[in-house]
Amino acid sequence: MILNAPKKISIKSAIPKRLKWGVAGCGNFAETTFLPSLQFVKLSRLVSVFSHDLNRAKQVSQKFGAPNAFNDFDAFLKSDIDAVYISSNTADHYWQVIKSAEAGKHILCEKPIALNSSQIEEMIDVCKRNNVKLVINHLHRFHPLIIKVKELLDKQLIGKIVSINASYHLNRPPDDNFRFKKQISGGGVLRDLGSQMIDLLRYFGGEISETKAFMDNVVYKSEVEDFASVSMKFDKGGFGHFSVSYDTKKPILRVEIIGLNGAISIDGYYEKRNISTKFTIDLYGEAKKVFRKRFNKISFMIRSVQRSFLKNEIALVTGEDGLINMHIIEDIERQCHSEKN
Image (cartoon, rainbow, N blue to C red):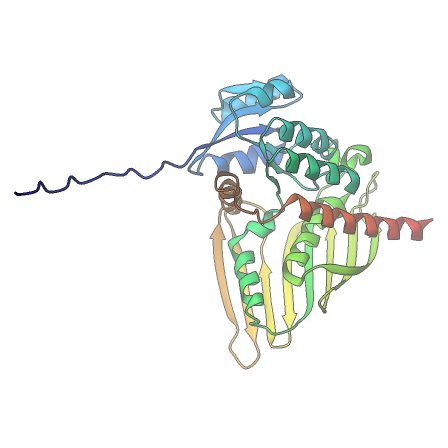
């Protein structure tokens, strides 16, 4: 008896789920940086836009092809979305994260995540209870060169870390932006740019055991500080320092890590899209190596967050990271305010 040849079985691979986004807050970063990058990320699609100003929500939704615009947050959450990018002012993060989590939406939230650590603790708890992910947009951690530096440090390329120095300065004169209204922002440049540097130094150097700090208004007078300088000690040894300000017309963003066997530095205004970043490795006994790379950093961030949402992966920057960063910020602010008093 001749057996029939077995039929070929065709098994179609599962088609990954497409992530449907809602964006809450229509500020400059969302409109000029996040949303243009989202358009080029496969498996992600903008579905809904929320703003307290309905005309503004309609304007942004039409510009980026979103079918829905809302000024009612509950209605926004009931639209056909899987995840929420919260890009509103800091005071709104708390209630918007909680409502989004209770609605079962994964969350990407701008930094700083909230006005204080007590709010963040509650936000983390609500997200855990509702089994949703909370990711903080400390953008620098998602940069490919930052990730490469971390890999080199973990491999002990420059040996024991002695010090990490970071500078982040740009020009931002006081205006009607929420950043200059303390009740809405919680503080000035320390919470805005400084929170990013704290997160980055923790990423490279580990947890921080002690800080010494200064905050002031060097150029611009407003409700909040325009300059901060912080020195810190890492738990596992070595020291760090960063300075941030709104006082420099020529933007500066530089990180240098000095170790026993040499140094690694990164230069470039790499929060923006498609800006060339300079990457330098200078080891003892070797010629200095300099590389220049250009990336759409926002797209890398969105793809990373997308993977954590769709594949249930641990995010690069979690709500717990936001809580640790806020504890450090609050400690710095207590130091500086007590010295003034």
